[in-house]
Length: 337
Image 1 (cartoon, rainbow, N blue to C red):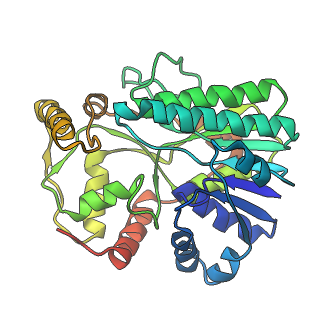
Image 2 (image 1 turned 45 degrees about the vertical axis):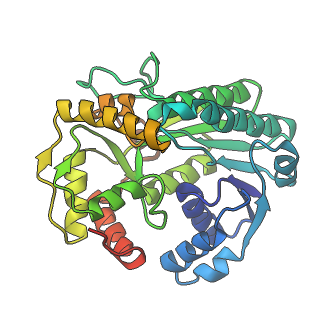
């Protein structure tokens, strides 16, 4: 039986849709308060037999920090996709990020060791890589000299737990996806980009990063798990795109005016300070930290050569994927200028 942690997130839900079509028994973890109905709606939206496929999933309420719950979820499991994680770029959340992403991953790894799990796939992030001079694409071989933000640091430390498991005998693969574009989860992750585009802003951020569709992410993950490959790490990037390009493609897909003005470095410096002040006065979550503002000033590019050479994988068209997501966004959420 296959276990998917974080089954109610973007990657976990789309992965479950793929796995249930394969006919193997699948169990997925969810935390108390998670919305399983959102996963069901995704299944129905993305597959003609989505309702039937959703019923194939064996759901297990389990927090990755709760060992008794997690031990029960691991009963009878042979393969694990560890997708559960906390995403936050707010420096104040670092302790929480370490607890969930690092200690939670250590719990998963320890159970894989104790139960002789056949293979573990860990979903990390390109945020776990150190930024370089920006002149050459980042590869899996880049030296780690520190993360650009607290989320990236927590994912790097979580990877260290996975490598510990590998050294102690667990067959592992690690994937480092870029910004994942996919439908169904408009209020988390890359959904924030669609929500921002739906407001028809005049400005777009400078810089850029690596992007990949959720379909490509899932296809590569399952391909690696079905192979004999182990002890390897792969950057998952379809294209390196500027935020200008992405925001303009989203605006076109949503049939709205495209942003035409680039935020200057000075404006970014002012904005992160205003966001800090808003956070202090109103006790709100940070929307733009100093580290995020710094990373937006220059584009960061990543190489997908390793995964392309390993699997011979051909990525789907990013612009078509964005347009598909825009169509579903309009249907699910509508446009709120």
